[in-house]
Length: 114
Image: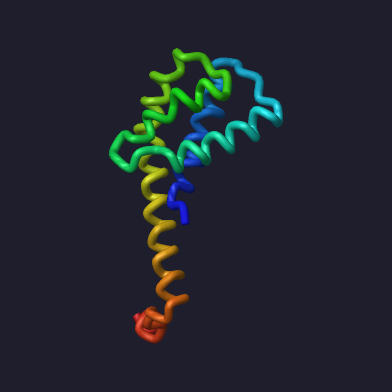
């Protein structure tokens, strides 16, 4: 499973905001490209603090957003990283519970009791 769902949303929301700020047209093809690029970059982002910063140059170039937006992307990442990390951790915990249940390792009685 991929635990980067928050990163995909964060990348795309940031791209939408920057495109609006810089007046970039957003037809359907742009949206599809943005979602696909955000998904691939979320998977490729290094799993270190600030690792997603390396992906913004690729994302902005793919979507035709000017290079000057990188500074705003870095600033926006500070706020969006809280959401992206919490979403990723929540997905990870959910996946662990589902996997434990599937393997018969989950004590359902104890969980329902507490």
